[in-house]
Amino acid sequence: MDECFKDLAKLIESVANALLMTTYCRLTNQNQTKIKQCFDVHLAFHEHLSQILDAWGRPSAGIYSSGPFFWLGAYDQCQSISNIMTLNQSVQYCRANIQIEAYGMQRHQIPLFYGMCLPVRCNERSVNDIFPIFSYFLEKTFGILISDNSTVECFKQKDSFFKKLGIPQWTVLAVLAFLGLLVLSGTSIDIYRKRRSRKYSVNKELSRSCSHTTTRLAPSIPSQMSSVYTPYAQDDACSFIYSDAPSQALTYKSAPAVRRTLKKSACVVNSIRAFSVCSTYLYLTRPCNRHLNSLYGIRVLSAFWVVIGHTHLFSLEYIGNVRQLWNLLKANENLSQIIFNSSLSVDSFLLISATVLAYRVHLRILQQKQRKSKCTALSPSGWLMLWFHRFMRLIPAYLITFLIIYLIFQHIGDGPMWSQQNGIFGARCDSNDIWRQLLFVSNFFPNECMPWMWYLALDTQFYMIAPIVLLLLHTVPTIAVALIVIVIISSIIYRATVMILFRFPATFVAALLENSGLATEEMEKMFRYLYAAPQARIGSFFIGKSFERFVLLFVSYFF
Image (cartoon, rainbow, N blue to C red):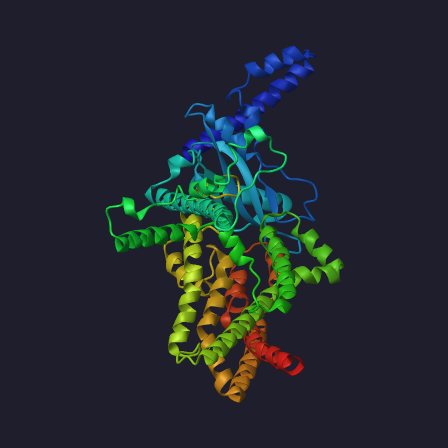
């Protein structure tokens, strides 16, 4: 603490001396060269003083209409100064996260992020001890009070990316490199086999013509070349076609052993070909009669709606004109509804998911009835296959994504808002998040570790109870419809009760505009009890289940 005060006092003294000597030189009518010499001689701290002061944050215009405030200063400039200075005179960048209470303002608390280029001996604790003095000065002068929950974080000089990686990070990178190698190998083998199959298809057509036709001399060929083009030329071509074919007579193995060897090698090659980009693209874009083409439009519009809503949702925490945006959205009520009610796009995706699931299960039941299969899609084994297929599709990609966010993503970025201790929003994960994410229960534990995965967890939870509803719909439809109606009404009552008890804003975006941040207590409660709660979203999923029955009735009646 004392060392920090000494360094700050030395910095302030240097600034005062520099200003004093500059004023003295100007008052004595010295020319510009003399002024510079005079300034350099009396500079007490070091030659980079002007750059250090310039790296501090400063207020911008429009303070009353802005907020939250981002007076971050020059982060890169402060860090570059510390690289070329000695250890005792080095500086570091510190960011103060201040909650201010201003009289006459509309908000109770306004976040202020202030960047400072301080001496290296000033740590977070010493800067926090200065806050009471700074708060007293602001309160007596401007009527501004700094909240007690204000914090300070200082940024040390970071090492290069590869120096920061440990064994877990290198393991993840090795797995990613291996997967990339599989994709490259599978794509190369796939392209080679497709070209080879086209070559042998041409050779097969030529071999068929070998046994039925003979090569005759063209009229335009001169007579002296007739010795080259003989009627037996095509036989030579046919023998050339199969010259590269493997011969079992040249091997020491028997024919069954050769077949087993070829079968094993083909299995390995086909496993690698499964990672081919070309084949995967063709498989995903193949035409299929089992799809509901009428849902494509709803899916595309909902996807655009999700992108627009979440773009505003995640960027609102890092912009300084939230109040201006609030006034702009209120002035344009028609267009603002797209942003305010963007959470409804999630309900449309839940409806589509339930409809497609019920439709595919219905088609599977019809196919099994035609085949007279004993195992149906609604039997316990069918349920297990449904859940197994769901988890096998999600867990590999989900696990890789989580490991990248948890182990590697923190070391990629750098900047004044990129905390070296906690990272940034969306990547603040700990060991408890591993089982929460992989068991798809992250929506019950709202935090800042991949919070956007709440939808996947919610959709998976609905998939777990979907077979029960489908079984009732195909066995006792009357009871199933009554159950669906009861669940939908209960979900509506729950949402209304939560809104009244907690006095939540109408939408999630409106709550964010009022709180100026995602990581607040009110936002956490709204996320836990309303936005990502299964009991609040299950109505849309059950409507999708019943919607599938109406689609089938419509198709059977009109077509």
